[in-house]
Image 1 (tube, rainbow, N blue to C red):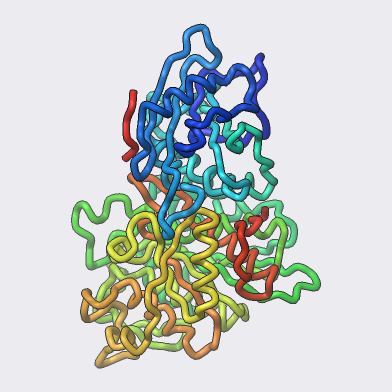
Image 2 (cartoon, one colour):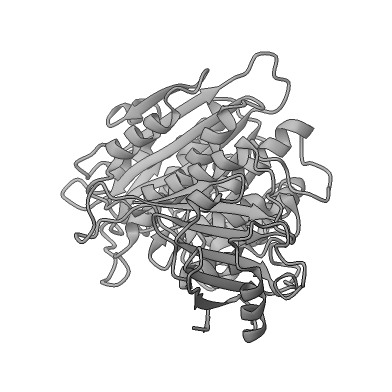
Length: 511
């Protein structure tokens, strides 16, 4: 297990690390005052020389050196680009992640130092480092109890430590826990186990109340979409609801709804080989909103509800079938024409329940919903679709500030509703034309189930960013925590401001 510890100051002589990785913008690393305030054991002159030997390219590059009779003995410098595009995060979080991934990560007595332009960049760069150092390892060569402890220090260009408030540390910890959940093998993290993990993460947070609706009880609550998708698995499907309502809160009631498919075979439309592998990641949306709710609930900025739609899309004699018609929680009927379009079914029930039963004013959902998201917005930007321009703008801004980048896709019911026309039911669950904005269409299907409720709604499809290089990233924890904190403090989308929201609170080129 890899443990990342945020440290608040430079190491002393007696505790100097065996190895050191420094990540810094090119201009800063070549300046004569680079890390001038660092202790004498930091080889600043060597680091500046290393900076002259490499160019950062678009996403950073790494150089390494051994220091004779020096502490530390092994030093690496990752040089980051000075400028990024307007669609990137000013913190250069992705360059930090890539450069950390290709560097020789410090081990038990190692330290990573990230040089930032602004103190508000501490959160995104810390998350980026964490994503390059996954928390879970099941390799037989490692002792089950072995732990690598790496210290992470954030400093300014002169080497003065940046103050890290407790909220940043909480978000980084929740992000890593979300990534670890995604990485757990699916037989070990079935629906019951995921619900248990959620309860464990929320245990001890004052005011949080949790309940579950599982198995046949889902039918009594009208949650037939969740039940149909998961009824064939050994572990029963369920809806987990966690609520917190601070006294005197006048802000909005925000519901965070997450798709928690612990494994997706595709159902009777069975996925082909190569497509089913890694589908343990299909609960990345649930992991993201769970982590965000955990962070937010410690300060309870407004009334909040967490809704996790948990199921395993298995096959067997009782599996739901193409041509079945489901009566959803919203009352709408859905003809099944693709059992592998299951995520929208569980989310449709979840958001309808959040609005009609729980009374949420704002519904934010997260899902690894479509492969088309990666075609539309790529691996670095999640796609957002919303019926509210203010929410869309807020998420784009929070994404740049916290490092969880998003890009909006069209919300245009008049263009996409027709894709779900059925001769028998209100809707089909999959589109007629796969070339017509699949990701927007999938979001439209979800919105159809609350379209008459006048609720502010935003959907995040994080299929690409939540699972990189076949590992979970924890993407979305920081994004949702920042956005909800901003909504609570302002009573709506926050005005633009320079810094990000205080979230509760040998030369080789990186790939």
